[in-house]
Amino acid sequence: MFKVAPLPSSFMLFSMFGFIASAFLLTSVIKTWAFAFLLVFVAMFIASIISMSKAPLEEEYLEKLAIHNQHHYKRKKK
Image 1 (cartoon, rainbow, N blue to C red):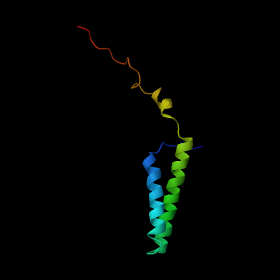
Image 2 (cartoon, one colour; image 1 turned 60 degrees about the vertical axis):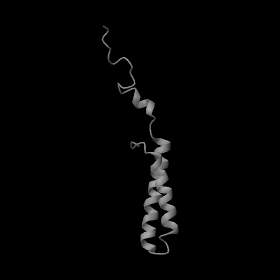
Image 3 (spheres, helix red, strand yellow; image 1 turned 135 degrees about the horizontal axis):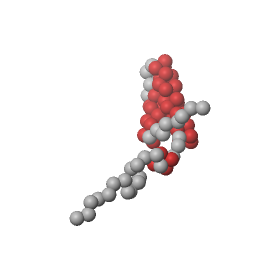
């Protein structure tokens, strides 16, 4: 089993735009580079789908952190 890191949504967006750009713009210029870029962007898209479905929620991490705890320090009264 492997641990899945949560990826930002911009990662998926970048993979979609990169796939479309390399599919339409690069295929007419250089076919081997276009195919290589298509493979990279498909791998990025698959990684973002796995991250969306398998990554742990932030609530699980908040229990381990002290930031969510409101009473971790007390203000001195005058």
